[in-house]
Length: 272
Ligand code: SAM
Image (cartoon, rainbow, N blue to C red):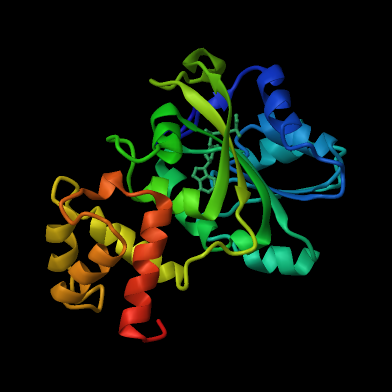
């Protein structure tokens, strides 16, 4: 029986799994980390591609099924019963001497924390391909100006180039989820884009969105100690950058946030 609290919705049709794996354009040399192998729908095609596959699955009940029924005969696959949120991606990439391919039909509960974690290790990543709930997909791809645009949109788009691949209806899964799913591709934006300090960028974005409906004048000056700048300095920087303090966070582009956090970082002159 599927465990709902682990977000278990298993892909029913091999064609969809094959299609997702094909989008990774694997050549057999890659090291692939799969998030949430489940009953191995994707794992099978990843294994077939010939590269090394590290399949993470938190639910121990599924491990023997995976190893003895789905994947016997594949010596290139290692099934690991571990939490994807705790896995050391940097260490694996270092050991293997190459950047990682990360893929999965993500359990809904861990989607945001996992994406935030992977932003922090993007130097160890070649490409990622994830199936997520449609509404999360909309937030990830959102452009400034709408209700979907927020902290996750700004930071993911700062760290990765995103591409929307295809949509899957609930009927493709057992048990059927309530909403559509979408498959998205992510490529790290390397070399580093332009933020002086990425942790500080994240703080500025979070501060700006802390009260979504208020103006930047209100949200940013209220967080003046966190931003390490006085309200007067914050307003002067906004003025310099020609960002109207009467605007709300959701109207700022990723680039606006980068410029704002860089100016704040320069102004206080402290290394963070
Ligand atoms: N890949 C399979 C498929 O497409 O049919 C299963 C996808 S299912 C949406 C997500 C899987 O992730 C479940 O098997 C669940 O047990 C597993 N899972 C949940 N939380 C996890 C975590 N923190 N780390 C690793 N796996 C997790």
